[in-house]
Length: 230
Ligand SMILES: Nc1ncnc2c1ncn2[C@@H]1O[C@H](COP(=O)(O)OP(=O)(O)OP(=O)(O)O)[C@@H](O)[C@H]1O
Image 1: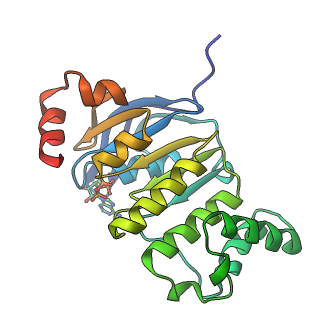
Image 2 (image 1 turned 120 degrees about the vertical axis):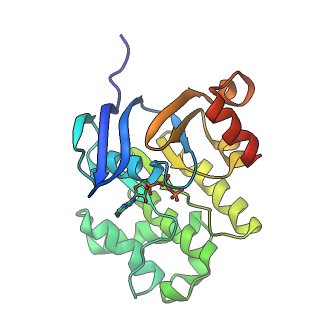
């Protein structure tokens, strides 16, 4: 018997006021998949991630999510940070999910070790570099032990070295989880994704295993996009 999808979207339409962000988007995501969302600016990648995380309502269509938001972790291009220490930024997220403060502190140190930030645990999070901030966000996600990781262009604002470091951590954090990420970096998509979903103006124009996406025939719009980005 095939396992039920973690997320099923059928003909989903999302609008921000009068602006259409997703139009008749249909896709299912199963446990263990590593799905890359690609497409031009404004094609609907962030909106799709927000639908999965339960952050935006849809105007029509049906959405079934079998993973509650508390079993998901979402990372944004620029991480949300509170004006407090790196340690407390992570520990607070755990505490808010019901972990006792003392346990939260211990689990936080373990997560910070994993991303190589134990040395700056006491620093105000707002003083971290962009790469460190994204590593802290990953530590926070990691500590929550989510079933699903949703990442919105997590390395977009980083320099090449930080990009590589954060990408390696993402690969490690995605182990044994379901990963859905938006990216403009096709090299990163090749390295991380098992499946590629190409969006254009809120529509899913291609949805293929990563190997087929990069080596097989593509719909014309997707082919031109890949050519332009490569
Ligand atoms: N809060 C908002 N209010 C109004 N319109 C919005 C809002 N967020 C997104 N949009 C619009 O919805 C459409 C889809 O945007 P979305 O952010 O999902 O695209 P994206 O593919 O993630 O873009 P990018 O690559 O630039 O991050 C765009 O036309 C965008 O301008």
